[in-house]
Image (cartoon, rainbow, N blue to C red):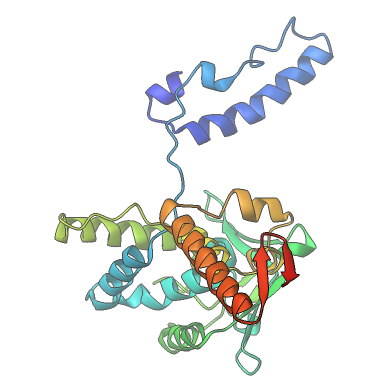
Length: 287
């Protein structure tokens, strides 16, 4: 309760409790304590104030990307945002990309690791934990061009940084070190702050790298992509995660799908009647 009063979010408190509860459970099992003081429902103690992650609408996406593209300060990040949005990569996977991961000839991106920086400043590469996270992502024309633009603007360095055997990272900061997730998150945070100041009459939801990943998944799911193919692109080990966590159903899309299906069935019935057939639900009988 004090953590929440001090401004900590529900998800952060959940993570803290997730570490402490099993530790005390082990102590209880070893008869070191009389009971586990963290064996209670968290929702009974603190308020779940976490915001539901949403996907951007086409209109919101167009407004945001146009703002980034035309802003004198943040236009330099436009290509980064394009790649994140159109690949659905995790931001740490994006930061871990090296020149060797980009196959421009076959137009595909290899994703098999992510770059992480500890609070103390130490970099390390975290390889994928499961085979499902190791994947190839296709380069659309816009991804291809944005990656080319990023490499053309990449700062020239005297000596390439090597992290756990990986070198040639495609994104570098002003000091020549590889960018990490915090860099990209800050770019979006600062751009969002400026947008809100300039356009108070056109509010947008809070946009983060993960919102772009969420939007990517939702858009392709709504467009009818096979869930197993989408699971592969997202690097999920379970299709249930793809369906339940990252796709965002809404009334407008559901209504649109119903209208299209109804129109298709009506059109089919008219064509069948023309040829002496009648469609009645599952059965099709010849008159």
